[in-house]
Amino acid sequence: MIYLHYSEDDGKFLGWFDDRICDKIPEPNKVISDKDHLKYHELISDKEQMIFVVNDKIIVKKAEQIIDWLDIRLQRNKLLNETDWSQLGDVQPELREKYAIYRQTLRDIPQNFNSPYDVKWPVRPE
Image 1 (tube, rainbow, N blue to C red):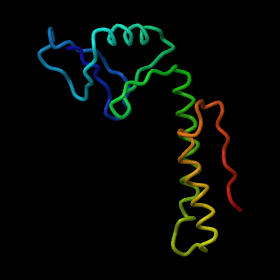
Image 2 (image 1 turned 90 degrees about the vertical axis):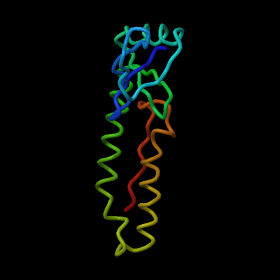
Image 3 (image 1 turned 180 degrees about the vertical axis):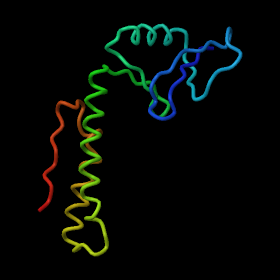
Image 4 (image 1 turned 120 degrees about the vertical axis):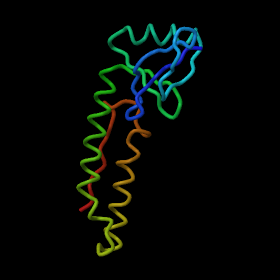
């Protein structure tokens, strides 16, 4: 069998291992078919593509799009950190609720947009 070895931290592809020639297969890994191995091997030989394992599924994305999604995530996390105060118990309930909705909208950005170039940032409550 062929194994795709990936980083536990970020899911990024680290290498291929074949149990017919390797005594030890590093963890974490995902078993893939010979056909998929050829397909994925071809994709990553193209410098524009990167392979990630997310929730045990293999994801192939253009390298530039991954970088752009990382930028989106950094900005989103910054906005979330800046509004952590809004969820404290001494904040007025109406304001806390407005910020809770805003913060959830920020968290949902990756699920609500197909491309990092399409992201529309929510308006921060006043």
